[in-house]
Image (tube, rainbow, N blue to C red; front, side):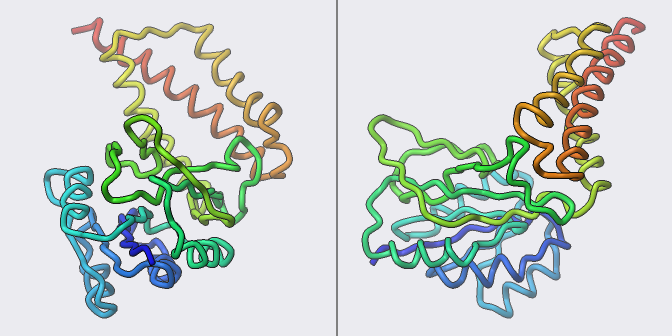
Length: 254
């Protein structure tokens, strides 16, 4: 039987880490919790349940992930965030496959919860992400386990039945705050790359985002919250463009 060690990254102190740990412990032989928040609450929870706890230091999550992986010797490593947990079907699928795991990596289908609703459209689902990796296989992780890429040629990548539940945003305020942070970082990146914007882009690109998410990607089928997400998506593009414009404006004044 293949052995599995799960590495869980704490996203927020108020994530339902208990649910993540409970569902993961049913399929993993060992659990390592990486905590960039350095929360005493998380540390105590790990100690009470005999899970390995590692603080994320100044080197960041990427370096801590590498250290955690080097310190384990399972056949496979399962990567999760603390706001995620395994569905019953996914747990059953993983358990029934333990005897015959043979792929280099496996994708899990992530379904996201926005404001209390599971988003099955809006371009958000299905969302297959590489999350279970053979320890010896080549891969690249930049700190975001949602974007793990397997390197090399002729790699066998499988999948499992069932969903990985992800509570992405508990309310709209959380989504809006995230958008504000992300658009600022994106605008600064575009500015450093020498990208420029104009009034046409500021008007057309946000509208294009809304139309794509709401109509093309069937966001309207997610109901009111699908519409809300589409509007926020359009606003996200608008904020990125106007922030880029302001950065150019401030730069020209120096």
